[in-house]
Amino acid sequence: MVLEQCVPEKQNVDSKAIERMFDYWDKMNTHVHSCAIMRGGKLISLCAWKPYKIDSLHMLNSMSKTFTSIGVMYAMQEGLIDEEDYVISFFPEVCSEVKICENMKKMKVKHLLTMTTGHYPDNADFIINDSDPVKMFLSSDVLLEPGTKYVYNTGATYMISLIISKVTGMSLSEYLVPRLFEPIGIENIFWESDSDGNSYGGFGLNIDILSAAKTGQFLLNRGSVDGRQLLSPELIDRATSALVSTADMEGQAWLDELRECKEWQPSDWDCGYGWQIWRCVYKGAYRADGAFGQYCVIVPEHDLVVAVFSGSECSQYLLKGIWDCLIPGIDCCESNIGDSSVLKKRKSEFMSGSSGPEEQETDSLFGGVYSVPDNPLGIKSIRLVSYGLTEFEGCRGSYEIKSGYNEWIYNDLGFGVPKCSFPFVIRPYSRLNATYAFQGNEYKIRMLCDGYAYYHEMKMIKDGDGILLKCLQYPGGDSFEVRCAEVKGKDC
Image (tube, rainbow, N blue to C red; front, side):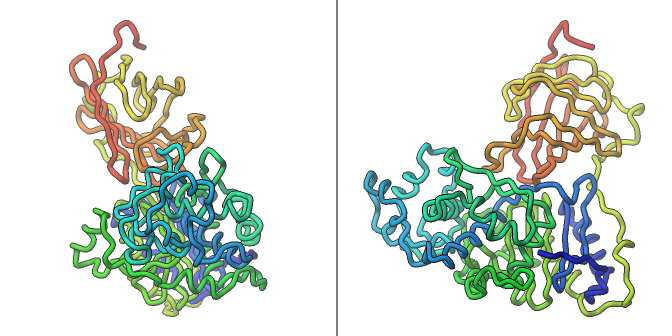
């Protein structure tokens, strides 16, 4: 995909509208990492919030599902899959070994795509927790008749990925390389896979922000790339339509909270669902959508694509910023000259704390070695060497984290990437940007997990001869708290 960059005003977009959207996102604490905006097929804005980087691979969470949908469309175009195909027809060897309920026998590919399988409620943990997830899925009780109710179902997307592997002889990720990734210029990708090498489908894809915007442009162009029609426009039109209603979607506590707030009525999650693609409140708009604000929003009416990665607890604010701040600035430029370079630099917030280390009450924390009880991060011991330098001993060996006061310091601990990033629980991450602060007798370190929505916040408080260690993963709120005893005879 040939990509041309220009200032927003060249595409009749007011730079000040982009600025207002970014300001709104920062005001609403959406913790944006990066954003790319395209209009008329041209890149008009590309921005990262320091210390995040434009070219870093980023976990898409459920935004991965839209790429799975594109894979299915290609397989349909090639005559390998039909939406009316029965799911059990792809797994005869498994079906011969387990009892299949009547509703499972009725389940079709289209039900997997639209998340109307009949499972109620859904439990996607089987994907990673069961030794034979296919057998688990096919033998599961399907309480409702397929096609009757929308229930968010990541397990269904995993089954789509397996079906693509069945009919193509390659993983979903491999299948998409010559069909999508190479034509639009996505060179660097990573997709988490199961023990057999099958892409998880519903999560686990990592790409950079510009690649996300290119994918949105591919959908907006209805499958055309540089004048070549690669994918059927009719398939894309169907995939991006509101094929099923999501207004009665249940089982999502965060959505219940949105619906209770008049500000979000209707919300962008109540507008219908296509083939692994959400519809939006703005007329004709749709989006690829991942947890904690991984979005690629396509607005055909304005020939507009907005891709954004974030770590937002309430990602509806991201969409509201597009509808209320950016779109009013389209075709309403205050100037024909405009210069996007005047947009102010953006950065992630540092830790809040008091003015300086010399004024703190935390000196007693430093020097000793503290034994850490069992915890999700696998930390065995911790030693606060000095402000900004902390040493850890863990199940992965010894390492240190350097953090800055009112600055970010990058650390690569050499762990590699998690084998599987689902579910959203606190876990070790290797690449971190760290900063520190203090509040009275509390010493705090904030660590941005590079390439993921999360950051970790560690708090250490003197507790007798030991310390109290608190760790929170945000967004999502997973946390732990342990009391750590000093290891006598081990100090600086």
